[in-house]
Length: 104
Image (cartoon, rainbow, N blue to C red):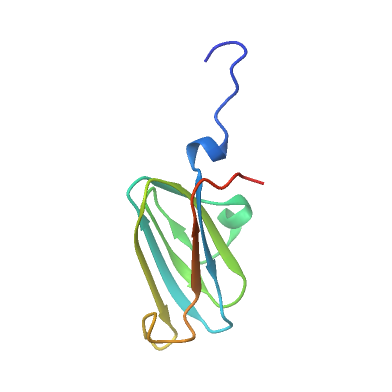
């Protein structure tokens, strides 16, 4: 790196953001990307979520789980506590995907 060059930021390396929002019912989620995926912010401290380079899976009841990624989101699977998948269950979490989101 050149002496005056800045290190790449999370925005540069992982510009996209996916947010899972719980609806008050225990549910499971799985996300897959064709690039790289990491927990956003303090999400690495969230218990019950397993993250590999390209996949995140875990549980959520309330609150949010956020992940930054590069590439395309290739798979999203959401099921409620009975194993009923979205969109057939109104209890499954919602998913928001935003591309080129600056880090806060």
